[in-house]
Image (cartoon, rainbow, N blue to C red; front, side):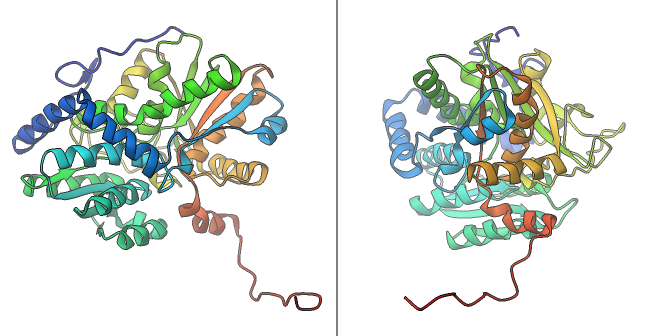
Length: 414
């Protein structure tokens, strides 16, 4: 595997090779240019970086641990498996790393209202959290289907003071939520900032989100060097839009000996409208501000997608991932719903860790890869979020039911 040095990407127009760019209505060009300028000023502002570092540590709880999954390693009889525990961040996922960075930018720009899209609800919760702590108005757009399957996160957002707007158009999932957020932003541009939740969209979002999330990989690199005195052999992360994956991968791209696998949603199998694996059925196209791999038909119409995981149920993938795919630097596979559910239960019962269904796709790939590697090899799996939000859905799928009555305690009262 050859190393890829991507420090000069994206270019000034936001392109990663043929991918990326800024494909938006004219009304959004100026706010995107304003955001780009403010972001790059903040990137080189020591005061901004100190403030961000303070909140990452004292509010979010970073650094997140790099945990040796001893029982899972023994069970698979192969490589040593480490979990990067983003599930232990405040709000339960990696999403708050980016939400915090962007809300600090919004304050610098004098914005008083925050909007966001969300699929699994974790980005919505993270955005509602940072808006609440800074006293900003917050509106979250969420597909109506996702509102049903992620009701716990809907309630969490409401408790944090956010208005949650169910989107009933189209497939009623993440793509439609993004559409509604963009319409809102166009209408309310003067006082509103759109905290886009993944490494997708028009420039500067892909590079900005990547850089806010690279703390994952920077920490993992330092932690594995401390624990093992060498770099890992393999990194694995799930890929929806791709922010948790690019956050882990980016600091290792120049290390030729580190292999990387991004895991998409295989859904019910690689058949039209039954999955969300863009590298296994997608083609070059433009959607929601950027050019990338997209699941579309021969006429360029966006296909329906499916995944048991709301956060991976999206028709496009981040442009930097598309470029890394073409460079053969990252391998992109997929896990089906059934494989993700199996991994979900295995990690829970072997390690006492209940992963998000998104993260369970990465764990599923680890179950395949680890037994094929020698015991002296090292895998890091990015556990991008915790599975509290998914417990009811998984319980229904697994046929688990609460007992009809709680039996009385045995023995004399204490």
